[in-house]
Amino acid sequence: MRTDAAGQLAFDIDTLIHDADLQAAPPWDGPAPLHFTSAYYPPDELAAAFERWVFEHGSFGCIPRSHMWHPAITMEGANTDTDGHDLSVLTADLRCDHYGERCQCVGDLMYRAICQHCRWHADGMEQHVVEAWHDHAWSGWRTLPAIPAAITRRDDQNRPSTKLAAWIEEHYPVDWQMPGAPIRTERSGLGTRHVPRRSPWRGFDLSATHRADVLSQE
Image 1 (cartoon, rainbow, N blue to C red):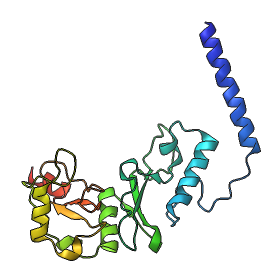
Image 2 (image 1 turned 120 degrees about the horizontal axis):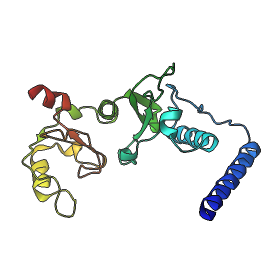
Image 3 (image 1 turned 180 degrees about the vertical axis):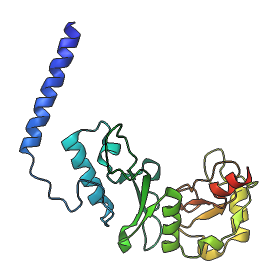
Image 4 (image 1 turned 90 degrees about the vertical axis):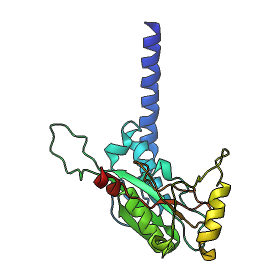
């Protein structure tokens, strides 16, 4: 009983402190709005707006409640090695979590690829925006030879394997063997996601087999 009372008291104190912090905080004057936007903003400005929303409304359910852009967890530092270009991937949860209420939710999980160096961006599904960025930064990637699925790509230390290095040396153009460059690999099953920092040059391992192609064969 005492534990419950002490816990409630601590919660009430934290709430009072937070309310005081909110009242003392200046109005939000950041460039990015505190809601979903289709306009271009640099990744840092979108992240700052999301953090302010969390400060004002709390972290519980902040991603679906805010519908705001925030860094995609699996895409941190997606590509920072390409000369003249960079890639940040953000996501916004626009799916509806209202029950029995009228709403204006769009109803999908969206991704945004940003090349801040060029003030370029693309919105869509994760695979789509990653490919769009490669069209932007690595034009011609779609014609790269696909590394056969039988070639082991990583060794026991999670480094590019010697078999992969030998295959690339034989089949890939020299000007595609540089920092940030991608590789294309044949995939089997459902593992068709484009994976960041998995090429020998810290570029993407791009799936040469799309999930839609896999499903059409089943």
